[in-house]
Image 1: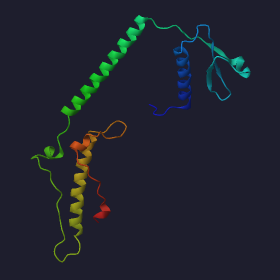
Image 2: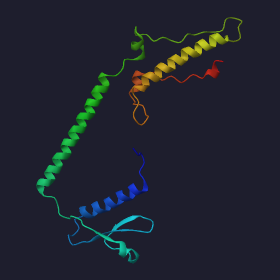
Image 3: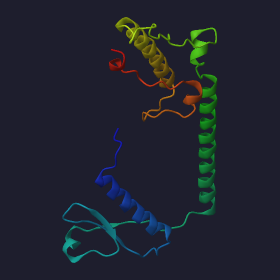
Image 4: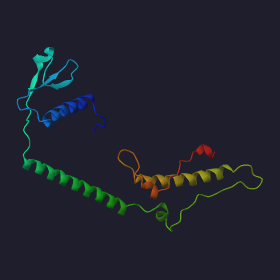
Length: 182
């Protein structure tokens, strides 16, 4: 699936927009519309064609009749049904997300209390923690970071963003750097 519009897509959109505007303005049924392509391959729609492109011009048939009252009512009913269906889907999605929202990290761990990483301080007279103590702190902080990432993963969107209400359920923990503990 392509995420970006190509120049061709933009040109086609412009052409369709031009034709739609032409039809929407209630142009006369006798008006003529032409389609022609310039030397760069750009498609043009116009009621007149430059002399150098007259050989490759194509006349476009445009229905300029107005829809009947019945057709307008039918179109309005279709739009209303589509809007109601979209609202229903939106409401169901929110209800489903709320009912299936994972419990907080504390509830998943059991007991309703979060486990804090061990606090290790240097002993009196010791200038710095030992490597084993620093690595124990790093592992505990890394575990807390992984749990945070697991919690946020359930709230990721397809585009890579995070739903705002994830921050109500998950604790944001920065990734610890091992160089801070070596």
